[in-house]
Image (cartoon, rainbow, N blue to C red; front, side, top):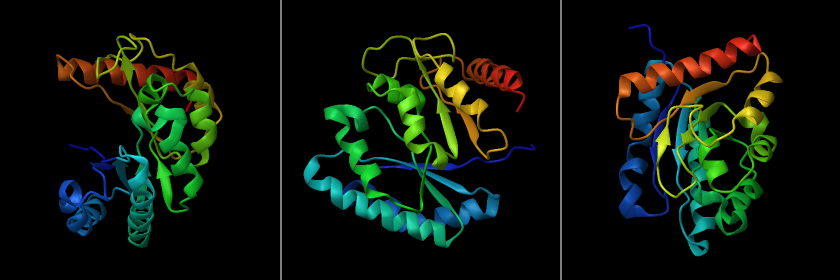
Length: 203
């Protein structure tokens, strides 16, 4: 069907054996799957844990990131909104860890909804962005009240300005919409939104 897989996505707290044991044991299988399909990225989301377990979790994240790198795969951290709560406690700790083998797949919508500026986010991880998630919301209320890109409350202007400066960079753009009433229409509308903005950038 002439499709190319941008990445695979796993989640869970790696320090929580009960929740993430399968992901630990299946990592090699996932990496083999990615290699077979010619995909270079494995996206991970997690770290939604209390302070007592956070350092251990980030240590595991660094270890898995290194294992991925040994296989030619880049592990990408994908944020939600919780990383930016409590004065960005989780986010600051993750950045302070300075994991050289870890890339990022920022979710712009969740970051803004979590109270973090889009420009600040891109300034912090810009050189390590490999996949950029666009997500829009109907309101600022808690929850996954997502909508078609460009029809909600999220202003993506900082992201497009940032992308205008990334000519030639190898970055995937992803439209992500949870709970769409019509999946086919969501794909078409969101795809058109991304394509029209890319055309304006001349990329």
